[in-house]
Image 1 (cartoon, rainbow, N blue to C red):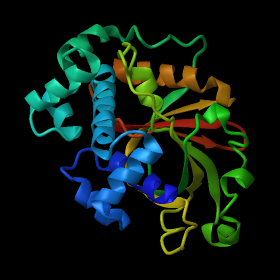
Image 2: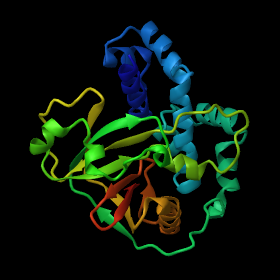
Image 3: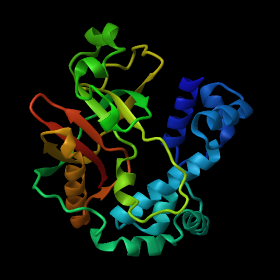
Length: 278
Protein backbone atom coordinates (compact mmCIF):
# COMPACT_ATOMS: atom_id res chain seq x y z
CA UNK A 1 0.00 0.00 0.00
CA UNK A 2 2.88 2.38 0.72
CA UNK A 3 4.09 2.06 -2.89
CA UNK A 4 0.57 2.94 -4.05
CA UNK A 5 0.49 6.02 -1.81
CA UNK A 6 3.93 7.05 -3.07
CA UNK A 7 2.51 6.89 -6.59
CA UNK A 8 -0.43 8.96 -5.38
CA UNK A 9 1.87 11.58 -3.86
CA UNK A 10 3.94 11.79 -7.05
CA UNK A 11 0.76 12.10 -9.16
CA UNK A 12 -0.40 15.01 -7.00
CA UNK A 13 3.03 16.62 -7.40
CA UNK A 14 3.02 16.19 -11.17
CA UNK A 15 -0.51 17.51 -11.77
CA UNK A 16 -0.48 20.71 -9.70
CA UNK A 17 -1.57 22.83 -12.66
CA UNK A 18 -4.48 20.58 -13.65
CA UNK A 19 -8.11 20.72 -12.36
CA UNK A 20 -8.16 17.07 -11.28
CA UNK A 21 -9.81 15.66 -8.16
CA UNK A 22 -9.71 12.71 -5.81
CA UNK A 23 -11.67 10.49 -8.24
CA UNK A 24 -9.03 11.08 -10.91
CA UNK A 25 -6.32 10.15 -8.40
CA UNK A 26 -8.23 7.03 -7.32
CA UNK A 27 -8.62 5.92 -10.95
CA UNK A 28 -4.92 6.53 -11.55
CA UNK A 29 -3.76 4.17 -8.81
CA UNK A 30 -6.67 1.70 -8.94
CA UNK A 31 -8.25 2.26 -5.52
CA UNK A 32 -11.53 3.75 -4.35
CA UNK A 33 -11.61 7.40 -3.38
CA UNK A 34 -12.32 6.51 0.26
CA UNK A 35 -9.34 4.12 0.34
CA UNK A 36 -7.08 6.79 -1.11
CA UNK A 37 -8.21 9.39 1.45
CA UNK A 38 -7.73 6.98 4.37
CA UNK A 39 -4.42 5.47 3.31
CA UNK A 40 -2.91 8.75 2.13
CA UNK A 41 -3.62 10.38 5.49
CA UNK A 42 -2.17 7.32 7.24
CA UNK A 43 1.08 7.59 5.24
CA UNK A 44 1.50 11.38 5.11
CA UNK A 45 -0.63 12.72 8.02
CA UNK A 46 -2.52 15.01 5.63
CA UNK A 47 -5.43 14.62 3.23
CA UNK A 48 -4.73 14.45 -0.53
CA UNK A 49 -6.56 17.75 -1.09
CA UNK A 50 -4.65 19.59 1.64
CA UNK A 51 -1.41 18.08 0.38
CA UNK A 52 -2.07 19.33 -3.14
CA UNK A 53 -2.85 22.86 -1.93
CA UNK A 54 0.31 22.88 0.20
CA UNK A 55 2.45 21.91 -2.78
CA UNK A 56 0.69 24.41 -5.06
CA UNK A 57 1.42 27.23 -2.62
CA UNK A 58 5.03 26.14 -2.19
CA UNK A 59 5.42 26.27 -5.99
CA UNK A 60 3.82 29.72 -5.97
CA UNK A 61 6.24 30.93 -3.27
CA UNK A 62 9.14 29.75 -5.42
CA UNK A 63 7.88 31.57 -8.50
CA UNK A 64 7.01 34.75 -6.59
CA UNK A 65 10.38 35.01 -4.87
CA UNK A 66 12.67 33.75 -7.63
CA UNK A 67 11.02 35.06 -10.81
CA UNK A 68 9.40 38.25 -12.10
CA UNK A 69 6.47 36.43 -13.71
CA UNK A 70 3.03 38.02 -13.57
CA UNK A 71 1.10 36.99 -10.43
CA UNK A 72 -1.98 35.97 -12.42
CA UNK A 73 0.23 33.75 -14.58
CA UNK A 74 1.77 32.19 -11.47
CA UNK A 75 -1.72 31.51 -10.07
CA UNK A 76 -2.67 29.71 -13.29
CA UNK A 77 0.56 27.70 -13.36
CA UNK A 78 -0.12 26.56 -9.80
CA UNK A 79 -3.62 25.32 -10.59
CA UNK A 80 -5.79 28.24 -9.40
CA UNK A 81 -8.67 29.26 -11.63
CA UNK A 82 -8.56 32.93 -10.67
CA UNK A 83 -6.39 35.47 -8.90
CA UNK A 84 -8.71 35.97 -5.94
CA UNK A 85 -8.88 32.29 -4.93
CA UNK A 86 -5.10 32.09 -5.24
CA UNK A 87 -4.58 35.22 -3.16
CA UNK A 88 -6.86 33.97 -0.38
CA UNK A 89 -5.16 30.57 -0.22
CA UNK A 90 -1.70 32.11 -0.31
CA UNK A 91 -2.52 34.56 2.48
CA UNK A 92 -3.90 31.77 4.68
CA UNK A 93 -0.57 29.95 4.48
CA UNK A 94 1.95 32.79 4.42
CA UNK A 95 0.05 35.57 6.24
CA UNK A 96 0.91 37.87 3.30
CA UNK A 97 -0.68 38.55 -0.06
CA UNK A 98 1.29 37.24 -3.04
CA UNK A 99 2.34 40.80 -3.92
CA UNK A 100 3.50 41.57 -0.36
CA UNK A 101 5.39 38.27 -0.19
CA UNK A 102 7.21 39.13 -3.40
CA UNK A 103 8.04 42.62 -2.16
CA UNK A 104 9.33 41.28 1.18
CA UNK A 105 11.77 39.03 -0.67
CA UNK A 106 12.77 41.55 -3.35
CA UNK A 107 16.44 41.99 -4.13
CA UNK A 108 17.45 38.38 -3.45
CA UNK A 109 18.48 39.28 0.10
CA UNK A 110 17.14 35.92 1.28
CA UNK A 111 19.72 34.05 -0.82
CA UNK A 112 23.05 33.62 0.98
CA UNK A 113 25.80 34.96 -1.26
CA UNK A 114 28.22 32.13 -2.11
CA UNK A 115 31.75 32.32 -0.76
CA UNK A 116 33.23 31.04 -4.02
CA UNK A 117 32.54 31.45 -7.71
CA UNK A 118 31.01 28.79 -9.93
CA UNK A 119 30.97 28.30 -13.68
CA UNK A 120 27.31 28.72 -14.65
CA UNK A 121 26.01 28.30 -18.19
CA UNK A 122 22.61 28.07 -19.89
CA UNK A 123 22.22 24.85 -21.85
CA UNK A 124 19.54 23.29 -24.04
CA UNK A 125 18.87 19.63 -23.41
CA UNK A 126 18.07 16.81 -25.81
CA UNK A 127 15.10 14.55 -24.98
CA UNK A 128 16.10 12.20 -22.18
CA UNK A 129 14.67 9.74 -19.69
CA UNK A 130 15.41 9.15 -16.06
CA UNK A 131 14.53 6.12 -13.97
CA UNK A 132 13.79 7.24 -10.42
CA UNK A 133 12.81 5.82 -7.05
CA UNK A 134 11.37 8.13 -4.37
CA UNK A 135 12.84 8.20 -0.89
CA UNK A 136 11.40 10.30 1.93
CA UNK A 137 14.77 11.36 3.28
CA UNK A 138 16.95 14.43 2.90
CA UNK A 139 19.90 13.68 0.59
CA UNK A 140 22.44 14.27 3.36
CA UNK A 141 20.87 11.32 5.21
CA UNK A 142 21.23 8.91 2.28
CA UNK A 143 24.41 6.85 2.18
CA UNK A 144 25.76 5.88 -1.23
CA UNK A 145 24.63 8.84 -3.33
CA UNK A 146 26.63 9.07 -6.53
CA UNK A 147 27.47 5.39 -6.64
CA UNK A 148 26.09 3.66 -9.73
CA UNK A 149 25.85 0.46 -7.70
CA UNK A 150 23.62 2.14 -5.13
CA UNK A 151 21.49 4.07 -7.65
CA UNK A 152 20.88 0.92 -9.71
CA UNK A 153 20.54 -1.39 -6.70
CA UNK A 154 17.25 -2.91 -7.92
CA UNK A 155 17.99 -2.52 -11.63
CA UNK A 156 20.88 -4.96 -12.05
CA UNK A 157 18.88 -7.27 -14.31
CA UNK A 158 18.25 -4.30 -16.64
CA UNK A 159 21.79 -2.95 -16.88
CA UNK A 160 22.43 -4.38 -20.35
CA UNK A 161 19.23 -2.86 -21.74
CA UNK A 162 19.72 0.49 -20.04
CA UNK A 163 23.10 1.11 -21.61
CA UNK A 164 25.22 4.07 -20.51
CA UNK A 165 23.72 6.03 -17.64
CA UNK A 166 24.70 8.57 -15.00
CA UNK A 167 23.75 8.45 -11.31
CA UNK A 168 21.33 11.27 -10.55
CA UNK A 169 19.03 12.69 -7.92
CA UNK A 170 16.03 14.96 -8.40
CA UNK A 171 15.30 17.24 -5.45
CA UNK A 172 11.66 18.47 -5.50
CA UNK A 173 12.01 20.42 -2.24
CA UNK A 174 15.29 22.21 -2.97
CA UNK A 175 13.78 25.34 -4.55
CA UNK A 176 11.21 25.59 -1.77
CA UNK A 177 13.98 25.57 0.82
CA UNK A 178 15.59 28.54 -0.94
CA UNK A 179 12.35 30.45 -1.54
CA UNK A 180 10.54 30.09 1.79
CA UNK A 181 12.73 32.59 3.61
CA UNK A 182 9.78 34.04 5.52
CA UNK A 183 8.82 31.94 8.51
CA UNK A 184 5.41 30.33 8.21
CA UNK A 185 3.67 30.10 11.56
CA UNK A 186 2.35 26.67 12.44
CA UNK A 187 3.55 25.25 9.13
CA UNK A 188 2.85 21.54 8.91
CA UNK A 189 6.02 19.44 8.92
CA UNK A 190 6.68 17.43 5.81
CA UNK A 191 9.01 14.71 4.68
CA UNK A 192 11.82 15.82 2.40
CA UNK A 193 11.60 14.07 -0.96
CA UNK A 194 14.65 12.78 -2.81
CA UNK A 195 14.37 10.85 -6.08
CA UNK A 196 17.41 8.69 -6.76
CA UNK A 197 18.14 6.83 -9.96
CA UNK A 198 19.80 6.97 -13.35
CA UNK A 199 19.93 9.64 -16.06
CA UNK A 200 19.92 7.81 -19.39
CA UNK A 201 22.04 8.84 -22.35
CA UNK A 202 19.32 8.24 -24.92
CA UNK A 203 15.59 8.88 -24.63
CA UNK A 204 14.40 5.42 -25.62
CA UNK A 205 16.74 3.35 -23.43
CA UNK A 206 13.98 2.35 -21.01
CA UNK A 207 10.83 2.95 -23.04
CA UNK A 208 9.77 -0.69 -23.22
CA UNK A 209 11.28 -2.09 -20.02
CA UNK A 210 9.19 -3.40 -17.13
CA UNK A 211 10.64 -1.58 -14.12
CA UNK A 212 10.61 -2.76 -10.50
CA UNK A 213 7.54 -1.47 -8.66
CA UNK A 214 9.38 1.22 -6.68
CA UNK A 215 10.79 2.87 -9.84
CA UNK A 216 9.18 5.13 -12.40
CA UNK A 217 10.19 6.29 -15.85
CA UNK A 218 10.29 10.06 -16.35
CA UNK A 219 10.46 11.63 -19.80
CA UNK A 220 12.46 14.85 -19.93
CA UNK A 221 11.46 16.96 -22.96
CA UNK A 222 13.70 19.43 -24.75
CA UNK A 223 14.17 22.37 -22.40
CA UNK A 224 16.65 24.97 -21.19
CA UNK A 225 18.41 24.66 -17.87
CA UNK A 226 21.04 26.44 -15.83
CA UNK A 227 24.09 24.20 -15.50
CA UNK A 228 26.58 24.54 -12.66
CA UNK A 229 29.57 22.26 -12.12
CA UNK A 230 31.01 21.65 -8.68
CA UNK A 231 33.23 19.12 -6.94
CA UNK A 232 31.56 17.81 -3.79
CA UNK A 233 27.93 17.31 -2.77
CA UNK A 234 28.56 19.42 0.34
CA UNK A 235 28.82 22.43 -2.04
CA UNK A 236 25.29 21.97 -3.38
CA UNK A 237 23.66 24.74 -1.33
CA UNK A 238 26.27 27.30 -2.39
CA UNK A 239 26.10 26.16 -6.03
CA UNK A 240 22.32 26.45 -5.88
CA UNK A 241 22.38 30.00 -4.46
CA UNK A 242 24.98 31.13 -7.01
CA UNK A 243 22.91 29.72 -9.87
CA UNK A 244 19.66 31.27 -8.70
CA UNK A 245 21.31 34.68 -8.27
CA UNK A 246 22.77 34.46 -11.77
CA UNK A 247 19.43 33.49 -13.34
CA UNK A 248 17.44 36.12 -11.41
CA UNK A 249 19.84 38.84 -12.55
CA UNK A 250 19.23 37.91 -16.19
CA UNK A 251 15.48 37.32 -16.30
CA UNK A 252 15.05 39.16 -19.58
CA UNK A 253 15.24 35.82 -21.39
CA UNK A 254 14.94 32.92 -18.91
CA UNK A 255 12.90 32.24 -15.77
CA UNK A 256 13.17 29.46 -13.21
CA UNK A 257 10.42 26.99 -14.09
CA UNK A 258 9.78 25.62 -10.60
CA UNK A 259 10.50 22.03 -11.68
CA UNK A 260 12.78 19.92 -9.50
CA UNK A 261 16.54 20.57 -9.83
CA UNK A 262 18.73 17.58 -10.57
CA UNK A 263 22.28 16.64 -9.64
CA UNK A 264 24.30 14.32 -11.89
CA UNK A 265 27.48 12.51 -10.82
CA UNK A 266 30.05 12.55 -13.64
CA UNK A 267 33.43 10.81 -13.24
CA UNK A 268 35.31 14.03 -12.39
CA UNK A 269 32.61 16.45 -11.17
CA UNK A 270 28.99 16.96 -10.16
CA UNK A 271 26.52 18.89 -12.27
CA UNK A 272 23.54 20.85 -10.98
CA UNK A 273 20.69 21.38 -13.45
CA UNK A 274 17.91 23.89 -12.71
CA UNK A 275 15.09 23.77 -15.32
CA UNK A 276 14.24 27.10 -16.97
CA UNK A 277 11.48 28.59 -19.09
CA UNK A 278 12.42 30.73 -22.07
